[in-house]
Structure formats: structure tokens, C-alpha cells
Amino acid sequence: MNNSLIFSNRLLVSRIINFALILAIVFLAGCASRRLVPLPNGGLINPELQRATKNENGVTVTVQASAWHGTPSDLGRYVTSLYVVIQNDTTSTLSLGYEDVMLFDENRTQYNALTSETVVKILQAAYQGTYVFSPFFSFYGSVFIGSGFFSYYPYYYPFYPWWDYPVYYQVPLDDIFDQALMPGLINPNAKLQGFIYFQRIPPKIKNVTLEIGYKFEAEPEPNILSFPFAIEKSRK
Figure 1: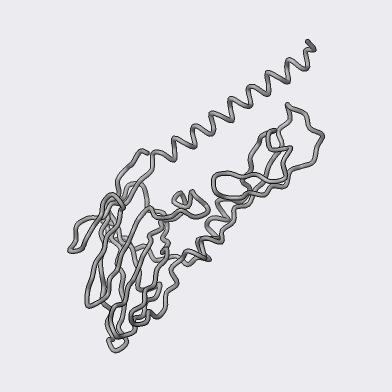
Figure 2: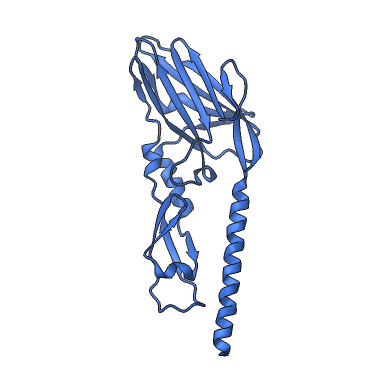
């Protein structure tokens, strides 16, 4: 057998092994994640679904952690997302703004809600310059990873099995906007729902509390509901 062919085959096998190791490391890192578990605080909680619900003066608020199933699938690596449903079963109109939603940790450090535009900027900065080295992608014009579609723009070289082709991809971020809670007025017998985003919680933090304030039309002061969560390590 030609020596150069033997060398190229060995190098290709080595790259396959290295690529598999990288995937394994990424998988294991994802498994060792953290989860927010609701704590008893005068409302109904479902620890398994990581959901808490409170009802006050005809207004029902439900908060659920780990509810994101959109794209990008690894959103939790960059921001904290909480799914919120506000049901207005009164005859008055409610108002809710980003400034009425805050997250506090056990040190009373405050985390303000992030707009969808800010989240997109965070993700774009994180993904900027991201690429995949693999000769397996050089035959295709598009790559599917998980549930997201990634388009790439390779350098066009003649294909040789020992060459790595830099594959650049972009992640669609429409779900960040489409699934976000849009603050504003909540009419009688209507509900507002969607994700509220916060910066990623530091690793040493063990507890956070979400505070949601809403105002009735004729009331100057907001009504505030608190939803405490413990942060636990999970392995799935």
C-alpha cells in the first residue's frame, strides 16, 4: 500500500477519534447542568415541572423554569429564561413592563429583564467566529444539528481526506423574538404569556426569587408576586 495513503488513512482515523471525544465532552458538560426548582411560598408548586402558580385578586401568574424548547437549544448556556403566564380574570385592565419584572439572588443582587434584542446580541457575540473542522461536511451545502438549521460557507479547495475544511454556521434566532413575553396592557379576561430573559446566574448562587409587579388601571402602586427558586445540580 502506498505510504502516503497509509498516512492519510491514519490521520483521518485520528481526526475521527478526536471529533468523537469533543462530542463526548460537550455532551457530558450539558448533562452536568443546573435546574431551578420552585420553593413553597403561599402558592401551588410542581417541582417535577419546575412550575409555580399564584392567584391574587383575580390575577393568576404561573412561572416555569427549563421550559425552553426553541432554537438555539443551548440558550441556557448564555441566559436564564423563565416562561411566564399572566391571566387577568378581572374586569380591569392590567399593565406590565420590563421594569416590573426582576430577579434577585440570596445576596439581593438584582438581575433586570433583558429585551429580546439584548439576548440576540449576547448570542451573536457568543457564536461569532464559531466553526467546525471536519472533512465530513465538505460534500454538503447545509448542515442540520439538533433541531436547528445551520448554513455554512466553506473554503472551496479540492477534497483531500486529510484536509480539514473550516465550516462556519449561523444559528437562526427568530424564536428569541417569537416566544418572548411582550410587556404591555392585559385586557380583562385575557392572558399574556411568553419567555422572560435574564443574564446567566453565577455558579455560586443557590437561590433566586422572581418578582413580578402588575398594576390595575386605577391603582398607582403595583401588586408584587414573588416566586422563589432553589438552584440544584442535575444530571440527565
